Length: 445
Image (cartoon, rainbow, N blue to C red; front, side, top):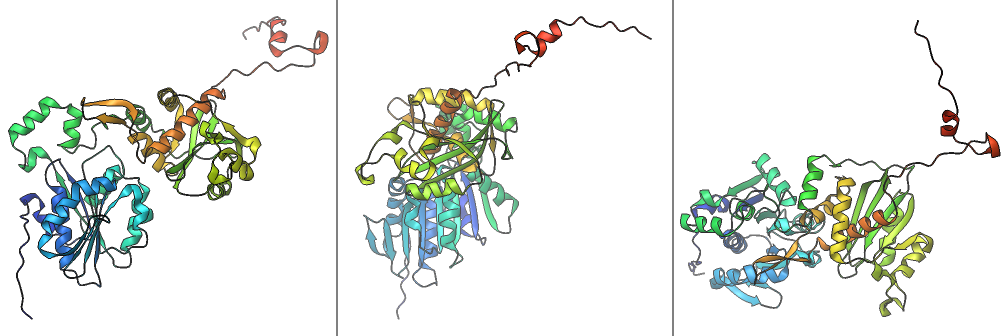
């Protein structure tokens, strides 16, 4: 059989040479904007796919949103793999190569589309923008049967799951390839451009996007300051469940999107958040099974105002009516309806009085840390309206929790005097008795 040499149109930048030559199964690359990390990751995948020896090799590229995967990576994939593409499917976002290998593009916003697939390798781009459970519950199991590899790439967005991955990578060099690439050190962008950037954007923006700082504030985050103060005060820690106190839940309800639930107890006016749960596409009965399966003693379940709405899909029953079948109508409460902005203010007022269980509430905590404003590209400023992404439902449920905490009168109150059956009319208090008693002088010995 005649052999033909095929040259792909890719020349690796020096910064990514070590990445292409790595031997570790896992890789983490924290790289500044416009350094070419996505181009490097796509070409690394193309080379791995066309040289793979497994049966019908399968490789994946994942962006936070499917539309983002198409706009950012699809053009690169078709261009650099063009000489070896046998078929390109624009609708399904995959290419088949001449050796029957396939490279597919996905969005983490619909991670379930990857369930059941077995990957030889996968790239998780802008991993800090993912829902934290996507890796463990969906993508990691897809690598098991082929012992596939994974690369995590992106720029920082606070100390979230991407920061945790990068810390693990730095501490385990025998298993992880790790790269941190700052604009001031890479030499990829000219110094004049970096100077212009520093003059035109905020210091936090520059440090996060170009100096890859995990310490920089998350831009546009609603609760960034409050969550940072909670961390500094060690209020994100182990919060034990007190079986002698009632437990409350606060819900945000969805079907196609997530349903999110917080579990909390109130201790002397403080909110002790002990658990969090979110799920997408589950039925009411499945969600209630999770709630009833917890060991907590429930007092009230607080629901958003739209729980009253009746739907044809539920035979004309509202969500609260469906929940009542499993949880009892007497325990269900519709929280007062507030505007989004008023709800955000309620959360800000609640957070200084709040403790979070670090383990049980990890995903919900990240929702609050990363819940952010929309960015207006026309005015180059942040809107007051929240950006709708995976953080929205946990943050919406937190608003219900804050409103319920405020309206239920959970703030500390002075205990009333307890009556004693003494005195005229059998009604007197200890304070009355002390007031009517002459103090006894004690002589010094």
